[in-house]
Structures are given as C-alpha cells and as structure tokens.
Image (tube, rainbow, N blue to C red; front, side, top):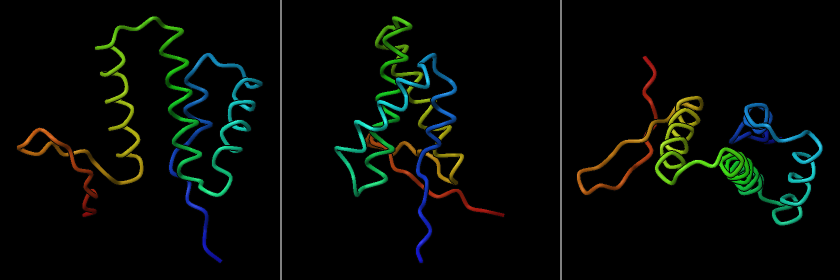
Length: 100
C-alpha cells in the first residue's frame, strides 16, 4: 500500500495565522470538494487561501506580500529537502538538497 505524502503541513501553517479553527475546517471542507482526489492540489489551495487571508488581515503592501511568500516557499521547500535556485535567465528551478 502506497504511503500518502503530505506536501504541506497545513496545521502548522494554520497555527501561524489568526484564523479560527472553525474557519480553517470550513476552508478545508470547501477545498476538498474542489479536489476530492488530488491531495497535492488540495493542500496547495488550502495553503494559498490561508496565506492570502492572513495577508489581507495584516494590510500588507505588494512588496511585503511578495517577500513573505518567498520566505514561506523557501522555508517549506527546505523542510522537505529542496531549495529554490535562481537561473541566469531570471527564472527559478527547484533542486533537491544533497544529503551528506
């Protein structure tokens, strides 16, 4: 039997927000209806909605939102053994961090 992989730690991310447990559970239920068979897309959309709602509450500027999202993405990738690498043409690639 294949083990279900958790792409994002939604509980951990939720705890960093000021969103109530009730709203968090409602959000997860709504997103699950949209992606009943795709765990990665479900988790991605819940994560993005949590981030967006928290950013709206804080009245952040566009630059502040971009910086916060970049930091969260880098942190999340590092937690699962990856890093974001900027290429010469200005685009990014995700690379696996080599274990020693």
